[in-house]
Image 1 (cartoon, rainbow, N blue to C red):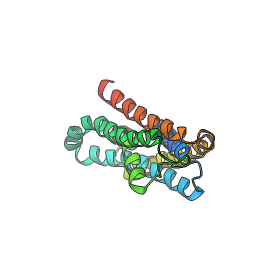
Image 2 (cartoon, helix red, strand yellow):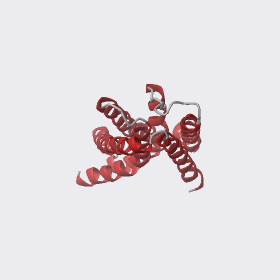
Image 3 (tube, helix red, strand yellow):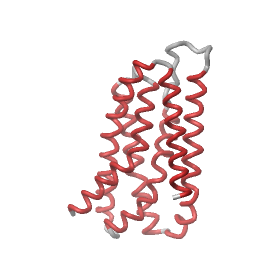
Image 4 (cartoon, rainbow, N blue to C red):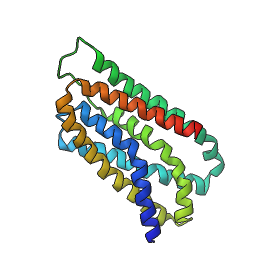
Length: 195
């Protein structure tokens, strides 16, 4: 049982790094963000980081063949979603006619796309959940829950850290946030396709 918990904690930290960077980018972009919204961002990332490995575990347990055909497309999907979102932030941040305090507001749809894009590569973690939890559903669920909690904590801290720096950077924070999202998309793509 301890091996399952420790492995899940390690997986949670590793899987949450993309979501951590995007959360920081969201905080940079909206330095006056309310605490409730920061909790919502961390909750969304935590939910999807826990959901994807669980979905991967189910796919491996039930429909291995179908999942194997989908897996090569994961890096491409993440790249497209993050480049579109990051590119829009970058474009809006570079516009000269915008007001100084005019920032790209994070909508539910954009947050949902960010959460999916940063967690979609965690689907393949379902393979390792099969090794760790076997076919015992509650062990897989416990592992996914630990991953979700770790991601929630890391992302919440990242949003607040981003807010702190976003206040100092002003509109440049939006440009930095867009660059971070594009870089994460490229990292997921390069890692998924070439390594």
